[in-house]
Amino acid sequence: MSVSAYNSGDMAQLDGVLDTTGREFAASIENVEGVPEPHRSHFARTLWIEERPVACFGVWPLQAGVGRAWSILTEQAIAHPMALYRGVLRQLVAFERDEELIRVESVVKVGHPTAHEWIQHLGFERETMDCGMRCYGLEGETYHLYARVRSL
Figure 1 (cartoon, helix red, strand yellow):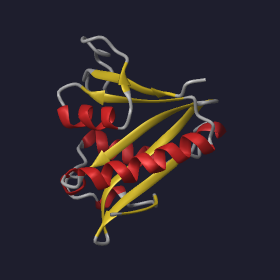
Figure 2 (spheres, rainbow, N blue to C red):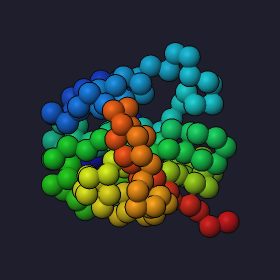
Figure 3 (cartoon, one colour):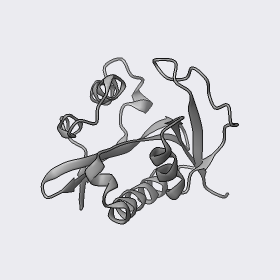
Figure 4 (tube, one colour):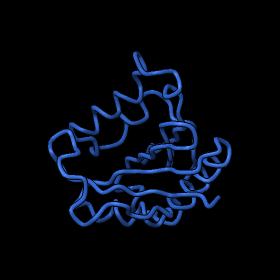
């Protein structure tokens, strides 16, 4: 598994994983028109297996010291859990250090156990109660908030 900087169009090559929300998200990270300057640049990477993209992930800066992590994984990426974990964690830790992030948070849709396990393996802790963040998604879905917080 190799890692490269995310390029426009990488996400579109992820076989069959993008639902409507995913396609809208993919378009949003490529369209920075009208986005305030501090939020325009972000860390984004693509994971590859045999010259095919299998995952895209990144962190949006929200404010000084805080970022919002995101990832879209294919079944091929999930089938290689240790390589996926090492590749993403190495990149995430380096970005947190380079950007002096104190907190990185992520939201995960309720009812998606693989995503909840994945984010916890990366060192994120759930911050929401069992009821989650109701109607947080574009289509009224409930999400949980997770965060990695660096000790000061």
